[in-house]
Image (cartoon, rainbow, N blue to C red; front, side, top):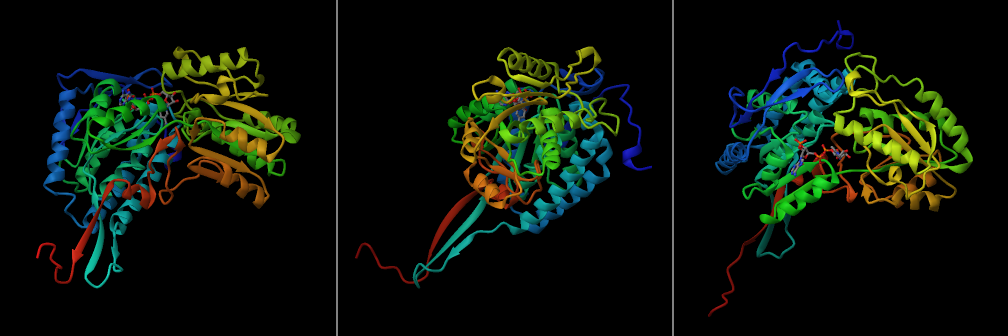
Length: 499
Ligand code: NDP
């Protein structure tokens, strides 16, 4: 029987997890526990420790010791690569367990979770290669009596705060790169979705990662996340989440001038030119705003359509949306699962109300379930949206699309860039010049042409403007976690300063 045909059942008893510090579990018995319920079914699925500032301090001290004694930073790239390759193979061995936990906690479809877990294993493979590629530079042009070396060193102890929308995949886009560089890590996953990050810690120990190099402290953002971002012994912080909390983290980093890597919100445009292959574009647009139930930072939630094709495009979009399968994430045929929690469900509801109140034209209005039925939202599409409406400016993080018509290329680019964000953009046209003019003019960290949300660890990811700072993945993603040191070496006799 293949994975795709296995029947998944909900746990009868929630699975309990401890913290993971210095290569060992800190037992959950006797601790204050957070119970996570499946957002699609309402039943308890996991329990994790509500970590405290003192747990965090122990984890940071453990990561600091592991960094300073060079048990990991002092290894060769090949030795680090061996651990990462072994970790990738252990992820594949435990893929079904990881995928189930991911679906139970996030509400995303099981087929998607399986895909994300296997893709994550591939990222650990890639980062293993990157550990061996990391190198510096030499300057042999400083004259016969001087040699210049530029070396890269691991930056130190890294704090890693991850969100709930892609818990295991976003971890994979950061952690193996940080480890490849030789750093030690203290991670704080979202309290809604901590299970797979904790299992990853166990996997890394089994793969041979020395104790203390990767530590996980679960708990709330307001306690553990705040303490991590203020901690004087954290050298760098990687944060993925909302722009609002990104700003808090930025302010907190001032205490010890932590380096930051921030991947924040987006309000990403799709640009559809009249010559686009419309059926492909419609499919891409639906994927862009419905994938992960719209809870995707790079998903396309603004649709800029050339006016001449707007009626035709809306018709194709409505027809195809009616065939989208929204429902139980445990069903292998489901394409769109549940919304992560009631708060997020309510945010989406409120934005749809605001769209109606601000007189955007409704193209399709999806129904919203009650929390007793599971937290589902059918896709909603508004048209004739103007740039001043809330549904055009704000990151909603749900399956809600705002259509803004345009007449000229200049119009399209102006509207596309009329946002505080700059995470991604997607262009649909069959004309190469049109595509390249748009690519060059759009201010975003990732741009897709005639495809959307394509990825892979080779390419860097990150945002322009208020969508973030720094880049993750690719060789850039390893270099981000290094400090650069310049060394001058005198080769000849010294010309004395004092005679
Ligand atoms: P947050 O930005 O609050 O959460 C992201 C991560 O930061 C979580 O691990 C969270 O922990 C942690 N965190 C929360 N508060 C602090 C703090 N004061 N200091 C340090 N870390 C903190 O996102 P929300 O979950 O509240 O979602 C709100 C909105 O953010 C969404 O509607 C969406 O628009 C956007 N978002 C964007 C994401 C992206 O990928 N760009 C991902 C998630 C959300 P905990 O969850 O345990 O509180």
